[in-house]
Each structure stands twice: as structure tokens, then as C-alpha cells.
Image (cartoon, rainbow, N blue to C red; front, side, top):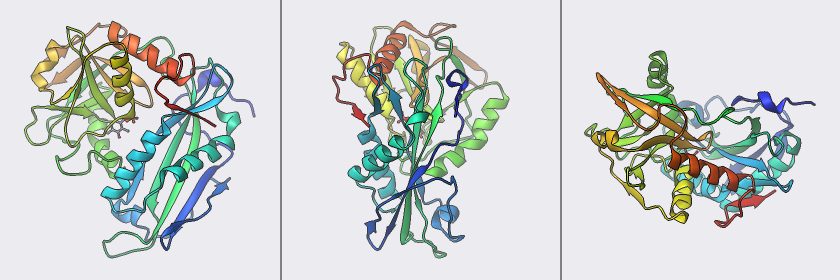
Length: 336
Ligand SMILES: *Cc1c(COP(=O)(O)O)cnc(C)c1O
């Protein structure tokens, strides 16, 4: 099969197989590579009715030395464990999580975009309650799958800033709810505000804390990060923010460059004072934000075009680590 690596976007392309494990009677099965991209599921599975489902997102890269490496899979394993615990699902041990990813990536090597194309193999682990249950309680059977699909470089001609909107009629997550976990239902709840933002010409929406609408939470599917005028890295802290692996990694890179990092509540009114603002997540790494609109208020931040100098540099360093152009001093990569 011939793939035009330069035309890849972020959409699903069928690959050789996915991997599937089933948990029953307290233990996981051996797991099998399955060619068909379909799952035979009981109509009363808890994932379908009660949202007992959580997922992860990470990438494998073809590196400069020709090897394929996973980027920080242990961090995703730990986060899936947090999600599973919160909605009472069977735990996927870290070793099983890594084994599943290794096996499925190995079986789909020809779908890893070559070094230099800017693409990567997107990896999507998914854990669902697959046991039949009508009363509301945790399922007695779980299915863990990992699917992979090649994705392209998001930015084809340099980082492009986007406008964001605050929709004060919507909250993403409650302070003691499930916002800190990557459960499927969080995404369903974000579809309507995301659609409304889009209709008004905003690619992303920014959420504020549900209690006061005073503090910054995060963008729909990515964390809020900012650079102060004196060069500090600032990111919002709250019990309902999803802890982004990308944000964590960018903080480590920032520290390694001697920058101060502040993880603290960020008042919405601080935004006009920031030198640079961005959204961060696995899909794109960094998306500069140059304008935030809330009602009549329009806040412009950072350069109107392109990316600011600090996020530009962090982006370069981070992506160099992903593809093995920079030495893996953090021990983040795992060879497949
Ligand atoms: C997945 C996700 C992110 C980004 O996390 P990464 O690990 O960096 O990809 C941010 N916010 C929400 C709500 C998410 O679900």
C-alpha cells in the first residue's frame, strides 16, 4: 500500500490491526491482534449506557536513527489508571499497557510516517466496561483495545495562532467531578459548546472554573499555558483540569532551559498581562492563541502572526526530543 505522507491529516485511516484484551473474573487475557476494525459488544454493555469508558492518546515516531519510539507511554499508563479508578473499571497494569502498545505498533510498522515527514503514528488506548448490566453498577467484564492510525504534521508552514472564546453558559467540569480524568463522557459534554464556538469562528473554547467563572481552567481538549513578560512559564491549577502529558513535558523542558515554572490558579483578568498564551496537547503540541473573546471583551496576546519566541523555542526542543534529534535526557522514549 502506498500512503501519501504529505497529505495526512488528523483522521482515521485503517491499518493492519488493533489489539484487544478482555478482563474477566479478575484477570486479563492474553490479548490478540484483530484485523477487523469492529467490536462485537453486548447491547447492555456499561460503556454504551452509563459511559463506563476512558481513553488515552499518545504517539510513536520514526526517529532520525531509523528506529521507532513511543513518547512517554508510562505517563499515559498512569493517567489511564487514574481514570479507571474514578469510574470503577478494572485496572490495566503498566506492563500490560506497554506490551499492548508495543505489539500493536510492531504489527503496524509500515504505517509509521517516515522521519522527516513530520507525521507520527497516533496511538489510542481505550478501556470500556463491556459486560452486560442494567442496574447501575460497575461491569463485570472490561475490554481494553489499542488502535493506531497515521497522522500528519499539524502545522505545514509554521505554527499558526488561533482565536479562542469563553462561553460563560457552559462549564467543562465540576470541581469534584471527573474533569481530571480522560473519561469519554467529558468529550460528549464538550461537543455542543465546541460546535457553538466553531460557528462563531473560534477553533477553540476556553473554560473557566465552574464555581466562580473567575479562574482559567483549560481549552476544550488542551491545557492553558502562558509566558509572563519576565519569561516565566505559567499554567493553571485546578482539581478539574485534565493533567496534560504535553504540559508536563513542556514544563520539564522549560526548567531545563533555566525558566521558572508556576503551576497555580490563573485569574482570567491576568491574561492581558501575559506575553504569550497557548494551548497544548499531544495532537498539536503547541497552538499559539493570539486572541481571547469573552462577551464584549476582546483580549489580544502575543504576536498576531506565528508563535512567540518562548513557545517557539519550547516547541522546537520538545519536537526534537520526540524524533530523536535531541538526546533523550529525560528518559521519555521507549523503543519498539
Ligand atoms: C487529552 C486532554 C488534554 C491533553 O493532554 P495530553 O496528554 O497533552 O495530550 C488536555 N485537556 C483535556 C480535557 C484532554 O482530554
